[in-house]
Image (tube, rainbow, N blue to C red; front, side, top):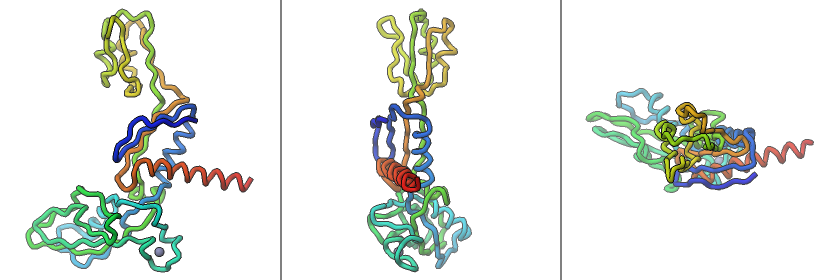
Length: 256
Ligand SMILES: [Zn+2]
């Protein structure tokens, strides 16, 4: 199997898996969404809440805020050598605000300046004189337990291949039909500008009356896209999922 980077930025990563099969692409996807751990708030202690929302609703919202995670230093609380939570397995956060204001995720103060909530998520609105004061604990967990620990949204698709045959009479119907605008007529030929952007919708095939265009997904080649919540870098998520898969294969080999 060959892996190539297609696109990469701060929060997302697209890879091409060549000479692979659907079970490998799906194993990576499933490992990422259910087994790559991240930090999320698990316990919330309310000291004061005179907002218009119940404690439970606020706690649930806090749980869904992605928190920057460092897998090198953090352990699962259940596997840590301490008994009641230490700095290696539990991250403490606090929130103290008085209205009128909108509380954002970054208003939560973390005890570790590197591990803090992802900024920019509005959590609740406080009216005049309303107050909120709470302490929270974030721990490592996996998406298998609760979706709040899921590090990313992952999808994969067959690598699209578009073929234009000699039957083409340059009517341009396929060019107009493509929702991704990846076809164009250049030098008396229909040209595919970027087949990777094709979503295999077959609109061009249906538009062509001469049956001159063929679109198929290559079932040995895949485009896999990882969109991180921000808790981990997308490349960290991918390499961690490969590590987990390797570890599982190793354990199976030992049993055999
Ligand atoms: Zn601990």
